Amino acid sequence: QGQLVQSGAEVMQPGASVKVSCKASGYTFTSYGINWVRQAPGQGLEWMGWISAYNGYTNYAQNFQGRVTMTTDTSTTTAFMELRSLRSDDTAVYYCARDVSMDVWGQGTTVTVSS
Amino acid sequence: DIQMTQSPSSLSASVGDRVTITCRASQGIRNDLGWYQQKPGKAPKRLIYATSSLQSGVPSRFRGSGSGTEFTLTISSLQPEDFATYYCLQHNTFPLTFGGGTKVEIK
Image (cartoon, rainbow over all chains, first blue to last red; front, side, top):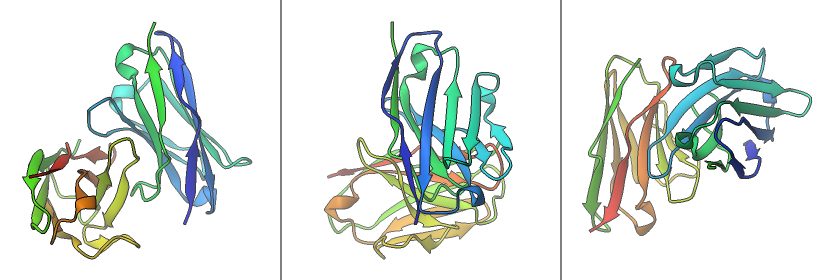
């Protein structure tokens, strides 16, 4: 069981920041971590990082270190992913997925970076 | 980082065919491997976890096997709804890494 519902599509200017949300329901939020994965158009899946919903501990992929921040709000059982200094090659679908084993996925959020 | 080398990158097959997809890890990952199916415009869906355990609701024609560094997804009799892209994921060690994907197309 469990469901993840993500926020809607975003169109951003280069250099801006985007914050995507992932609302969890149907399970104990603090029992699982949340991963963020992105998929550029026509490309494969790229892991961005993981956050523990229990204690907020994070592990970020090297490619995103310094540019990404993952947080959680246990009062609303929501995870957030903020990506800064957006570039055109950040245009992608961003997914959240539960647990390191990624058993439950959000529906995806399309982020388009364009001037 | 653990590299996941997935092969083939694409294949053409007919309904009823047996299909095999392989992922090779650059170092041992115990059985910390899952297989995912993705259809166009949709989120990935987990088919197999812990190398060989079938996700609830997934047809038994999907089978995972392997250990250590070599892992296989087998579809015993390809059905029309199985035409999709398949990915493996290792979750033994951060950074988590996916295979490059295998696109299964209709012959």
